[in-house]
Length: 118
Image (cartoon, rainbow, N blue to C red):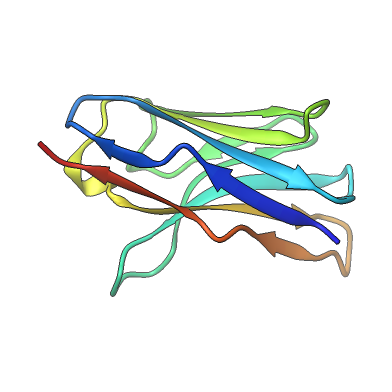
């Protein structure tokens, strides 16, 4: 059974940085997309960044140029480096793993809270 566990959230001042980690346990297809999403109460879940096992990455417009997604296939982990944080980046950040073959499964972590405030 695949499990995703996020860590690294917390309180940070505007302009600061945080690094989130998503540890993957279990067996997920090697053909996958690992991503970070964020959720604010009353708003739709938003794509932050996505990394495909084939190489490409993509970012949400709100974080382009400030956040960097990376993955360690040996350690089975995905990271999100967040820089120049703004109060509007405050949210619960969730890790998602998607198996890209037909009929593949989506997996979600439970999330980690990021609060950007002075």
